[in-house]
Length: 254
Image 1 (tube, rainbow, N blue to C red):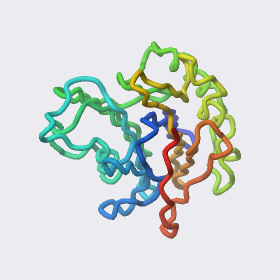
Image 2: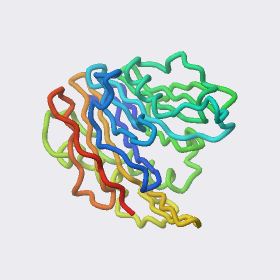
Image 3: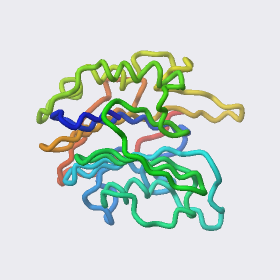
Image 4: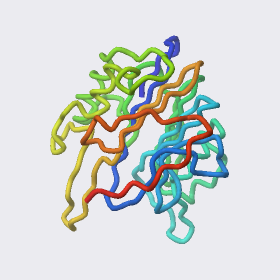
């Protein structure tokens, strides 16, 4: 997450979704009739999303699983509805947090970027200052204590900031940001890797399934998506107009 209030694109977000490869999903679109203005990739198992954008409101919300006390099984709700609620409302709505497992929720808009952290007991809220910040499952990695943060944060900070343009390829719009957002060619098994893949002891594969880039500006919201992180050629702009039909289900990769 990069915040520069006086820039032409004051808020930039790069998000990597790590999940089990067998979990089905759909590419970003307007999948939710209850949130007609919101675009995001749809998780077909729980129905929500990991990242939601509201082009008209110039807002983007991203969710990360957190650490702490899990919600009781009998009343647990999917955390995937939280980005939809936040992107649509421009704030964390007044929901009963005891329904949700721990999470970190980032909400960016032209008025700034806020971060909420719920550990199952306490809710914390912070406003992120100007600069480049990395949010991980343990929260805001302020001191770049993790190898991934220590390696990638300065690379995003050094990359030339995209200037607002209408249309054009992902490469043209994002320029120097596209390489670190794509993992900078680092091997999956490197502890610093942004794009990862690992086979667990039970045989399941946990991997980076997609990458998202979102830019917020007075002129609009730019949304680019990479559905195959092992192939940067699959980067493309998501159409934020109202006319495009939903894309077919992406088949999970084994």
